[in-house]
Image 1 (cartoon, rainbow, N blue to C red):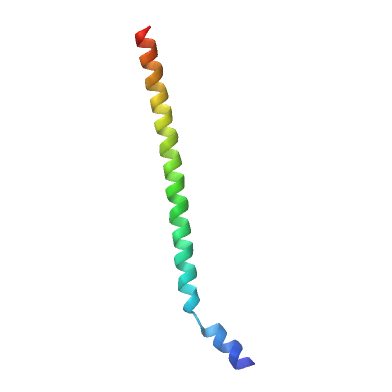
Image 2 (image 1 turned 45 degrees about the vertical axis):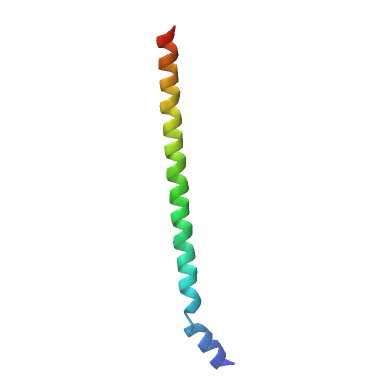
Length: 58
């Protein structure tokens, strides 16, 4: 039983898959955050532009 437990502790083959999964999750969170920030910024810019054009046409 102790040999099985010791072999289980030494086995690191699944660790790399977990690490790659965590890296992929971190990258996706960063991309989503950046895209939403960019979207909000563009929305504000276009809203300001629409207001300016509305005021210029009146």
